[in-house]
Image (cartoon, rainbow, N blue to C red; front, side, top):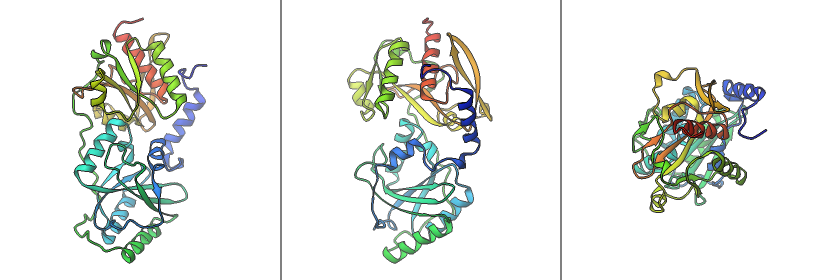
Length: 338
């Protein structure tokens, strides 16, 4: 069976179980692992931790009480965590990551604090912000502490900080600042398809593995009716534009309800389940996916103007292969291409 065929019912049930019980998951998403694995770890607490600004990136499993407790200790310690951000938003896709990177740079952030939680322990990792859209790069160093008790972990961070560092941060919020307005896109959000893609070559960023890239290219050659080229994901959009590309294929990978919020869908239309359009033998069908499940959603973006084109239906799916298939087949149907 093709990798682009529908998921088996057993797999769907397994994924639904994971979504309903996220605390059973390992601490990190694939995206978070890709970022944090670039950190060079040290045994030494950062020397300027109590004199610069930081941002906390937390996982969905954290409770408000745990974040409040964290901020209480950070305030006493002198760690100026200027805001707390759900990492599912930050690492949802290339566009969201770039938007948050710009925000971090404007606010003069020095450290990203990855707060992680599994069934067995808490881990707080302090890493130097790279100052660019990658967030962390090969120059980033990090220091981390783990403990089965959050209270003990925070006490350890406090004790090591006050005994080794000079506190220079004094004006620190009592509670974590979490409601940060964020503009993810510079252009308009459109629930239709790009016209430019029909006449100009589309840039398609490569994925992390050669296997995925082979699948991606094979599928696009078979089903995408217009010109495209796989490109280095690190290439700046302006440089792609200079090479003649007008559009770029983008995606988000996060929980369904977060994806809809990022992409500007009407929040009143986001319920416990989301209706996804997919195709069987060229005929559109509808299925439902829980809004808490992690999904992939593709869209096209105008390189020159920043406008994004989501398609005319919600077509997110559980795998990137199915999500891409849904989006491209919907594009073909809209363009009346058999």
